[in-house]
Image 1 (spheres, rainbow, N blue to C red):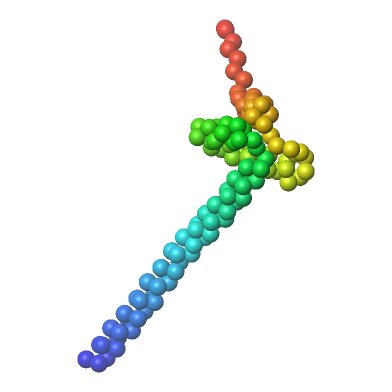
Image 2 (image 1 turned 60 degrees about the vertical axis):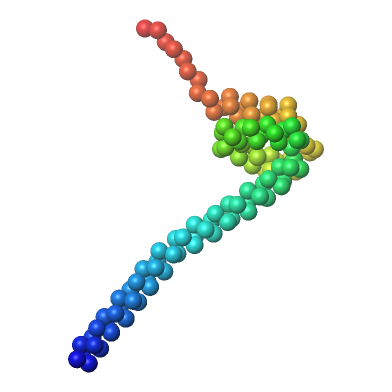
Length: 119
């Protein structure tokens, strides 16, 4: 019976190591996802801090309202202003009227022009 017990122990050890490898293989993508989420969260926090300095309170309120309806648009506008500030092209703070104009320009450029032709 010792030969059978040794074979059984060897099979158990082999299966145990196989399961460990599967768990490690499954955990690698999870850790990558967690790292990417942490980096994205850090970038988001840095952007939020920078936006506090760039926009007036009224403009920040408008961006917050836009973000509720169109999160991609709000993120794009925030990144645009952040880029302008880091490049030194933005002097001073952005007020609500300037933000409205930028949002209108973006809206006009992304809106489809529809024409109706009668036949």
